[in-house]
Amino acid sequence: MKHNFGAGPCILPQEVFKAASEAVLDFNGLSILEISHRSPDFVKVMEEARENVKKALDIPKGYTVLFLQGGASLGFLISAMNMAGKHKKAGYINTGAWSTKAIKEAKNAGLEVVEVASSEDKDFSYIPKVDDIPSDIDFLHYTSNNTIAGTQFKSIPDTDVPLVCDMSSDIFSMPIDVSKFDIIYAGAQKNLGPAGATLYIVKESILGKSTVDIPTYLDLQVQHKKDSMFNTPPVFSVFVSNLNLKHLLNNGGVDAMEKKNKEKAELLYNEIDSNPNFEGATAVEDRSLMNVTFRLTDENKKEQFDKLWNEGDIVGLKGHRSVGGYRASMYNALSVESVKALVNIMKSL
Ligand SMILES: *Cc1c(COP(=O)(O)O)cnc(C)c1O
Image 1 (cartoon, rainbow, N blue to C red):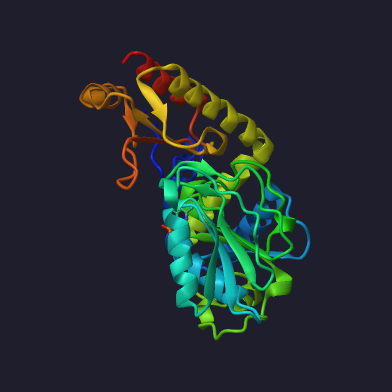
Image 2: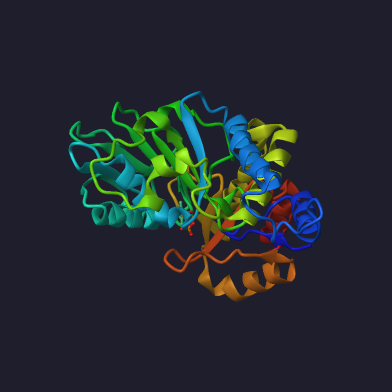
């Protein structure tokens, strides 16, 4: 097997791939790909998936969990439209390419956007201090883990303003205090399941309070009232996400994941810091546990290093075109052994 360090779609546990493939051929006598989303068998899957998200993240009462479509990219617009309040103004922390796109969509939703903090001055290689949050904004939006730049918030911004977070690339990698948020959204394909579903965790008290006109599909109140079945949901993606959630719950949950993810990150960052051939691409204190970005100190060794990891069955290590260098994405299902394989290759350069 190859070691998949790709940034997404993500690696999933082998058991999940196997169960998913079996259900393609036989799910209670039909294929999971052909069953009606209104059939009791699938309604049960959807209910279970929503419940398992609540269990996995220990979500308090008063929140609804939805599986919609459109990816996190539509989540930028959905979250802004549903959170638009009396100020029609929102605060955004700009920590990279995804935050920048989220800002653009908030403007498309008709909101005035204040960039409360930004790390654009240093190519998004750090997490900016957030100390001046205006009070006349409807919500504050941030990206918990910056998949492309390789930085991650180590704590939740301290504010009384409603919080919205794009957690696409670090949800389920550790415990989170959901009670601090009004909307959390995440494309499934980074750490949850196959592409196609987008997860929303929404405080029920915000539903129906928007001050802008929301197209029906984008209205979270509609989606909530229809139990996440307003139209045909992404059946297969929800099914496999649920398999993965069950696997997570049966293997120690997000606490065990956090431990494993810290162990993997420590192994790789230690090698980057101790091997003179490499250097990290971000501020040390803001390093992501999920997406590790690094560079060669001598570009002349590129050909040699690329040959080594390609021959070592490592996949997906090339950095994002906007950052260059390398990016090792280490989502939940990536094993410690895979990280050791990469570290050994780095040592051999
Ligand atoms: C990948 C990613 C996105 C975009 O996700 P899509 O589901 O492809 O729209 C948005 N935000 C973050 C943090 C991401 O990692």
